[in-house]
Image (cartoon, rainbow, N blue to C red; front, side):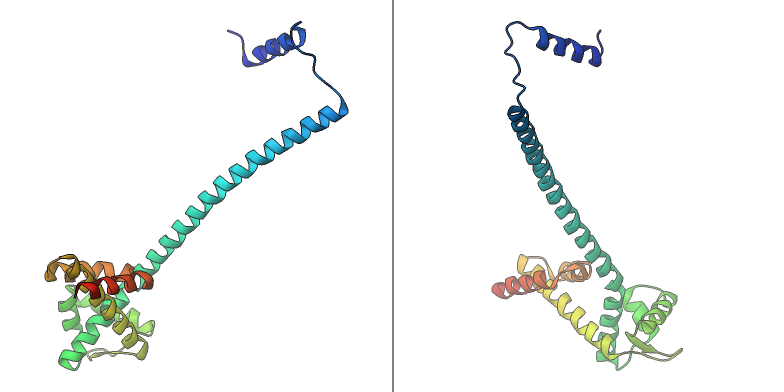
Length: 194
């Protein structure tokens, strides 16, 4: 079986020695035109490939932006949950204690103590050992935003026909990942159903 190189030689020799083949025009103008045509074809192919690559790049960039937003939402999820629970406990009991937060979130008091220390370092809470936990101004604002998002998602799910208990449970996961634009759409939809 002939190799690819041998096949190329054969086809080239066939072209050259074929008596019925039209002779190649080798003028400078023809060569220049051929080169330009070849360049244009290459340019078109390149631009198509570039368009394909830029579309793929745009998809990759938008995917990267989405993943970055999700990671950011995961990072603030704990702060939102804790500030929301602490705000609720303060509204009900006048204070929030580690034991109450642990019970409400279903985690150990050690987890709450460590998380409270981190959230205090981040400026969301004020706490002292064996004392109640209080929200800073930033923490209170975060709690209000988290509560508003939670309630909007719950209203939306109920408007879809989900029972209230399931709506509250599902809202706990969804509320952290809803963009402001989507949240506004959820609120509009829920308002139509009320």
